[in-house]
Image 1 (tube, rainbow, N blue to C red):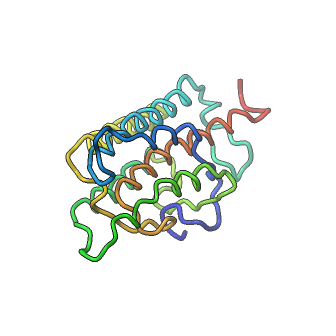
Image 2: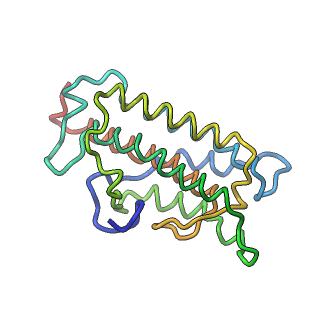
Length: 212
């Protein structure tokens, strides 16, 4: 693949985020500037919203529903869930690594703020992305419960990071699809990635022959 969600030949998990997340992302805490770490705290409700939406989407599924595939090349709900759970630590890891290094002195921090672009691209369902090999489903979880539990634990760690004292506008790292992003943008991407594949799960359920 071309890298983490870089544009290219699509695996069958392509999709987009729901528009609803955008209204949360535009909020700002009173008296905050755009470079303060408190700005990210506006995203905690979004991290919680996408968490809850995913958990609701996989709640109470039968084994047949969990493993149903609309076509051989399509992903099942099990594969979507595995991908979501596995991606959380990988994406957050990029953020954590970036937070250890300051921006170069000659880097224009404002040029790294791509929140609106991230939102626009992600909600465009015509855009297709490739899953990096480490995130292609391999049946790494022994049961649906194990996949869900792994996601819960990873998202709890992500929320803890978001609640910390890091200045997410003061650090950045390269994203294969969006170029250089500050770590605030990476956190937007992380939360949206969950929603992107939750929407894919709902698409699986919408198939006419999906088990009832």
